[in-house]
Image (cartoon, rainbow, N blue to C red; front, side, top):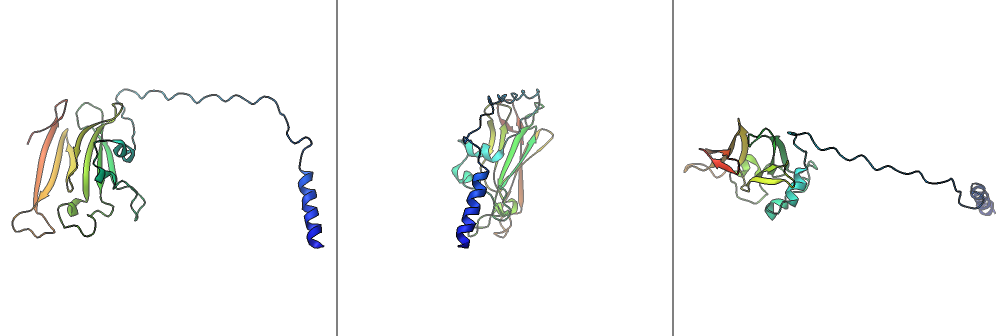
Length: 188
């Protein structure tokens, strides 16, 4: 009996909230204005890009590198470092992207090599002012560090000397490159 009384009370409460006729007409719907268009960026300003999305859509990026573009279990962050640096000397910054191992070292079971020193898998330089972005330099070799100093691109890696243990190459090799207007050319 209690259940029947409780059910009838709920039914009365619910029907009391309904409006006569079911649908109310309030008038014409208000018109929504489209959002203002995004103004073009001022000259000399570098647009911002998602480096992971850029690497995933670049057909020239190796599939092995693309397979590494997922969040790291330890941090939830992608193993990608990026920064904007003027590497071509034109006053507009290019996007420098470095792909690393999630834990800073090669996958378990791989032989120890120079990648353990840096944890770097690959480096890329993009002109992101161009539409679509243009890749200017790709170094898909593990263990290489790409940096710049006063308009000169420095590519650094380590090599083993004859007496080096397998964990630790000791010979640092740095090659310098400068933008020629069409490509990076080695200067030293």
